[in-house]
Length: 293
Image (cartoon, rainbow, N blue to C red):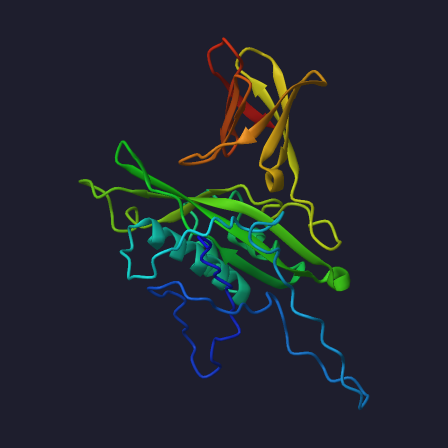
């Protein structure tokens, strides 16, 4: 299985140590601790409360789960600037979130890339009683103009405080670093989070209560030619439906992409990263579009 099955559990932090190191060289499986959990106050009764079963992620190869392509992943030591080093940053990120160390997790984003203040970032996780993640095998490093990018698949799951409802979300994280070029600082040469397509993103609406959260999303774009497009994303089925003026243009299938997302089919193509999107129709040149609220 290509999936690195990295259950990020943070209950392993010893109470005898005030400074836990979440990094490792082999990305082993680790059990994640609930985010924002606290020691419960004893109830005035002798009956023991029945604990809820641990939240479980969707299995690899099933809707909402990570890919299951049966490709083995090397567990050998890796360098910090490698693709596996980027995956380790993602593992560390979710480990810190699970421990409630939101300030440290926030620093793993590029400056301004999180789209919110550190305080708002921390507050966005208050709705979860349990927050875990599995990190998949990273894609190849995309190089160009002294910059490096790599995409890492992630599956996030756990429970909401409201009704103890479970949720399950799947997406990817785009990481960026500057190559070893003159003038680049040590911090710039480290992997940082640039973007994520996991829905909902921190600060957005709560996941829909139920057996699993609906992983579908939609976006509207304004293009340079004045037209507007609507895109309905269905990442679990790796497809997007593109419409214009309420009329469906095409249903496109997910394609490999070095960074961001790419869908294609029938001569159409949609490429997007963050709020930027490029749309190509049959026989026409690509046109730049921008997401609108």
